[in-house]
Amino acid sequence: MGLLSLFNKELAMDLGTANSIVIYNDQVVIDEPSIVALDKTTNKIMAVGKRAQQMDGKNNKTIETVRPLRGGVIADFEMAQHLIRELIKMTNISRSFMPPALRMVICIPSGITNVEERAVRESAEQAGAKEIRMIHEPMAAAIGIGIDVLEPYGNMIVDIGGGTAEIAVISLGGIVCNKSIKVAGDVFNENIIEYMRKQHNIVIGVRTAEKVKISVGSAVSELENPPDDYETLGRDLLTGLPKNIMVNYKEIAHALDRSIAQIESAILETLADTPPELAADIYKSGIYLAGGGSLLRGLDQRIASKTKLKVHIAEDPLRAVARGTGIALKNFNKFSFLIK
Image (cartoon, rainbow, N blue to C red):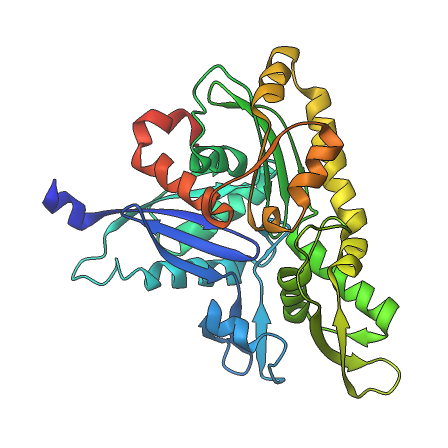
């Protein structure tokens, strides 16, 4: 078995719109932004992940930064191949006299089309994987949270990532009903950029909007322990000069209100589609939140107020999906019917 392990390697990958996480030997070995920097003059990859993110918005005309995934699916096939290949290289598993046969389990949105799924599979194959399996994000999130998905019991998972919000009711190892909407972290950033432009006449970039969201982002306009106001730097629309303003969490709650309302509507629609017996289970257990979007201040209490259900935020919600994908890979025989 030890000799075979030299020639057979297994990776679990959460290929996310904002960040990609790779698990090898039950450990998170890679956690990098899903971004690639390209030298347009030579058409060569300059950097991937954090190094590429540092260049984003600050690059010159010869350097292009690309995010291969949009809305939870591959938007740039070639760059996605480069991203997956570089992530695999970062693990160092291929540094041997004979490259190993690589098996991968990659999580995908529950609302993905066959064409989009094929794009993920082909990108992984082109990047060097010999066997590729897929698992849906809500199922991976549920496993990562610690829910026994094989039990005849209904659980509702809301996974809010960078590109999509995945809402699903799970029972007996399957997704009973689900909804996938392209309203998540990226849209939150766009909301903040638009708000700053309209209300403060200031233009900010995506990276600044992300910092604002993390520093003073909120889903409600009243918090018990509000964060301090955040100094935001950008370009004045009227003068064209650099400008700074102070932003508070109430403003950001207003900016994000419409998008969060869309997520609430999707949750209510999924609950309306849930069979009565499973609805009774969800009434007892509540709703589980995962993904980076679940860290938005007050989101749990806002959803609880809207649904009249208990809402739980997963431990380490940013890595819940990746952790569940890794568990599914490790216990391949147990979860084989969940992985396609």
